[in-house]
Length: 404
Image (cartoon, rainbow, N blue to C red):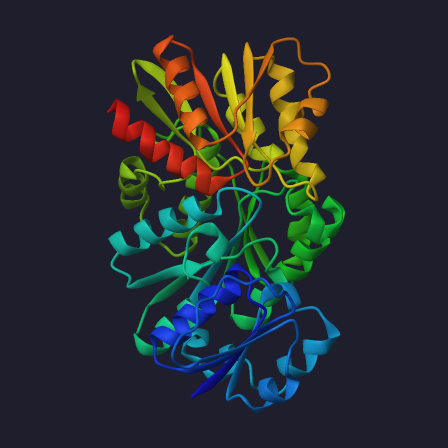
C-alpha cells in the first residue's frame, strides 16, 4: 500500500513513522525546505512543493491538521481516500475525545485507568504534541487489534481534523483559555471552533466555566462536571481536581461504580512532564508544562514562589508573553529568564515593566539547572516553567540525577 502524507509538522512526522513501521510505501511533501527527516527505505519525499499527481495516485492520504481547512486539500476529504476512510475499524469502536486548553493528557490517562480497572480494553492516543504517537498511529492500531474503547486526545488546533477523522461518541472539554492564538486569531474564534466540534455530540463540560456552559447548548446531550476539592489525589494542584472530576463524570456516564473511580483516582500518579511538585535539597520545586497564561495562573494560585525561572516564547507568539505578566502580579523575589522556544529574553524583560524584584538572565540549560539548584539549596521555593517543554524535561532529569 502507498500512502501520501501531506504536511510534515509534528503530526505529519508521527504519521510517517507509524506508516513506515508497518512497511507501507510513503510519499511525503511539505512546502518547508528545512524538514529534519532522514532518507529511509520506502519513503519518497518532496520539499518546497506538493506533487498533487502523486498524492492523487496514492491508495490513502494523510492530510496534516494544519492543512485540513485549505481549499487545495478539500477534495481529498470527499473521495474516500483519507486514511481514516480506508482504515475504518476505529469508527466502530466507542470513542471518547478529550479536548481543552489544559489538562487533556492527564484526563485521557485518568479515564483510561478507570476504564481498564473496570475491565475494558482501552486504546489511548492522539495528539502527538501532547506526548502521544499521533492520530495515524491510533487509527492503524485500532485496525489491527480489537478494543472496547478508544480515548483520543484532541488538540485545540486539530478540532476540524479530528471531527472529520473519528466518530466521536462522547466529547470531554476540560476548560478553555488563551493558547495557539496564531491559529485561532482570537479566543472567540476558538470558542466557535469548539461549538462546531461538539455540535450534535454527547458532551461533558466544565460547569465552573460559564462560557463552556453556554457552549453546551450546541451539543445533543450535555453532562456537567464540577471539581471536588475534597477528593484525595496524589497530584499537585487544585486544577487536577478538574481533570479528576471530568474523568469521574465519564465513568458515571458509562455506568462505572463510584467506589472503583475513587480508588483509581486516589492512586493515580500523574504524567511525567506535566506540572508536579518535587522536594529537592530540602526545598520545593514546581516544574512542568505551563506554556500558556491559564496554566501559569493555575500554578501561581497554589504556591507563593520566591523564585520563578521562566522559558521564553517564540517571537511570533506574543500572547505567550502574558505568562510573564501573570508571574509579575505575584512579585517573586527573583525572575530568571532563559531561552525556552526562542532566545527572546530581551523581549521578555521589556514585558516585566512593573516588576520590582531582581531579573536574572540565563543562557542555557546548564545555567538554568545550576541556578535552580543554588536557589533550592538556599531554601527558596522555585517555579520552573513557561515555554520550552523539552528543555524543561532535560533540566528535570538533571536535577533528579544530581539531587535525589
